[in-house]
Length: 218
Length: 202
Image: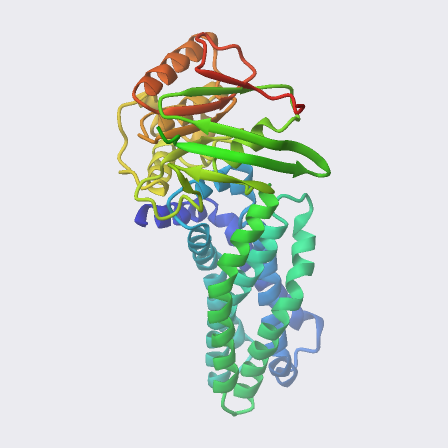
């Protein structure tokens, strides 16, 4: 099991600059938005939740293409299917590694960005928590779409279309947690709901992705 | 003797074409079965069905006399698979690939003396030549101790000498009790125990 995990980390470490493109997308969108509007602190603070979550979503969609494509091309799936490990478990390892290299940088950059947009301390904390709970759900939900489109050329566009409706609840709760915190209200309800959707997606996404990959590979 | 692997009444369609209509295959330990036939008639599909990668539309697959469900939860993987793509990551070194693929199958990950040239271990798999890549993946299969090997075109990409070497290695493995199912267009230097000529007609 250890060796399996090490290989996932090594894969992402070797292509770390590619993985960091998600961070780049997130930062660029976050930076460009304030430039396009009147840079009033009040206005920026009002827009911040939507901007942060919108760019986090874009960044996640951006990274999905790399999730399974290379492996499918190299024939990894057959080796995984004839192995002694359940395919969903192997895919779950992949998702965790993917999140560590694409999601975690976005969480950290999101906290910095929130500070830069002039948010209050509870607001910044809400950004951190909501991204921490939300980005793994985005990766897990996205993995299903990535699996379904893994051997299509131009599958990235299709997987974005497939996955965006699933992302909407995460976006709504994530942005509302931040907005509530900024308004000085409790964020627990939104964060709990995000936690629930995270648990649900972690449980179901590996199973769904495994089924999708098998169908795609036939 | 119960066959290692057997398929009964196999029916399978691809698109709207019937590939198999009621095929029975038995694979016994120590036997080399060559599947030959023209392209596009489902040889590789048959191999995938036998290896449990595809569930057939109709038909039963039995492993050691019991209905096959999956290879999971076996302590050590009882089968080896070599498809048209070997499953080795081009970006990783031969040794890292080796350790990973061994762990996937529940084997000790340490490298062992085998058909792999010792100089290859630190090299990236993607930097090896086509023949070297083939040889590395075959070497991995050879010392796995698995009961059945499924090989799709194992000789393509190997030069004449290497191809002959690999064929004698397959025979040695079969004499130790390994069952080998191979799809190959190449004429073998030995005569396999059984040849299944698959033309897609009955």
